[in-house]
Image (cartoon, rainbow over all chains, first blue to last red):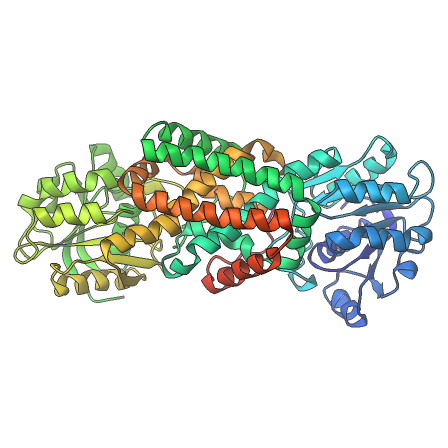
Length: 291
Length: 291
């Protein structure tokens, strides 16, 4: 159990990620008190029942008052509006962070809003954890265990604040990694947004042959079952890197197609992919796969 | 436990699928005796140690003698040569089947070889089970539980033999499904070969961003880590249906790309994919996903 790092942590948006964060902060003793800001009173009750928060409010201004850690865990397109709303109420030493999958626009807008040299400091964050479900009911205090926690400071971000966020990530069991905001967006376009869009395209192509679905199709398309609203926002907020990733992927696919048609170089291409996959590690199949 | 359906079952090729089949036949009492045909003497020892076979031989002719069920569980491009080798030694009432992922060429060649109206009968089979590992060490008696077992009879196949293979599939805990051989090949090109090639292409595109790999990438690319030899064979044996599937997939991908670039219809496309995925069911995430 780590030393208590924060006195009061406020989580704005207590869904899958915010709820899991609250659970982890409480279960691991990282914060003395966890305050949740929700949109409806009823959500306070369910968030408390799930042990994600100690107390809740529907008023963001009241929620962030007195907090030394404020996590904006709202949908990507609500991060900047919410930052604007809570900024005047943050206490000077507070650390403000978010969990959105897209960073460049968000970081630029919030830095323009706060003044990181004095007062509360913002450090963009993106825990690479989640599943295809949503809401506090799907939350888990172990969601971040062993995952990468991407942090996107800029030259203006105080190093002390980056260190505090890294400490938070470690306290959650995650591995903090620093990456420049635009580079972050290019990277997640490849490792997260592209696989989601590919899964959606696979469903469009192969979905009708469902009864015979094998383990590859089921594994590859699971993420296509996640709620659309967040992904559609991500596609809008990260349009250019995503279009670049799609173009790179189509080129790769065309190389394979040519190799299959010609019978040339196919084994070498597949072997290179296999080795890259083995280097990637992670998610080994647990026992026999079905389908 | 089902009634013993076969007196002597011979499995030619005791790897992941053949080994799992042998384990299931023995554990479930489906066959009185399971004989394994392997390439090396040493493999007999490991197959016996894994409880996949009762006894083994490296001589296919001797192995199939006296068997009322013969399963060719060798790599796809060895199925026809092996059928040619064992055909003269099959007993008249024997049921011959295979487990290859590609069917049209195999079924046509073996039917030309056997004469299904008299003597031993061949029914093409394809259990939709497996994982990215290989060999008897990865085998499991439960591998077929709840999976589709595709059978590809032709108008020349005796109905009694189809029923016997369906009975075998049910005894393994699988769900027998009949499909015409060429249709089988088109279907698996979509639900199995395409996801594999897409996984390989994703590795080629996103592999370098490995440290930040999210659950979608890990899930979507797991199959790309499987041994290349079998997949390269499948690409050669099922070339045309695979090229058709790749073309259909690229079209679907281009629709998404256009929708992202224009900002139009994206939500509707993603929502259609989501609903198709939820209809597909299967492989729900077990607890929180990582990455």
